[in-house]
Amino acid sequence: MSRTRFVLAVLLAFLIGGALVHTLVSKPVAPDMTFSTLTGKKIALSDLRGKVVLVNFWATTCPGCVREMPGMIDTYKEYKARGFEIIAVAMPYDPPSYVLKFTQDKQLPFPVAMDIKGEAVRAFGNVNLTPTSFLVAKDGKILDKKTGELDFVSLKARLNMLLGS
Image (cartoon, rainbow, N blue to C red; front, side):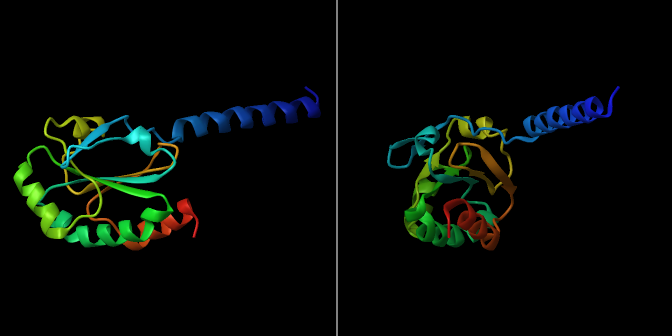
């Protein structure tokens, strides 16, 4: 085999291997969910393409969820005009009356959805710990999954990168 053919074969193998690795590690697309908010509004995740979306699974009885809500409120207010959206999904076991009271007491400015039948929980991989958050890119791909309280310094840095400073 000539040196040129060898170099071409190695280059071709490298390119094919790189494409394969890229395919294997590419980000999954978020499920095409339609959320029902406390106000009865329907929000399809696919309708939010073009925005960066944080889908946050939470419960009124979850201490970490309660602690992170002020940070979520601040982040939402700071980034909403730049193309950021939050959908707070209450867990199926959370009584709707508790969720409504919490939402009103804390004056949550972002949509709060009820997942009474557990459809969103299942669609996002059987979420069972709260808080669990998914950061969804403008193209609908899941960028990150975070179980536990959000790090708002890191989240805001990521939003600045995704939305432009």
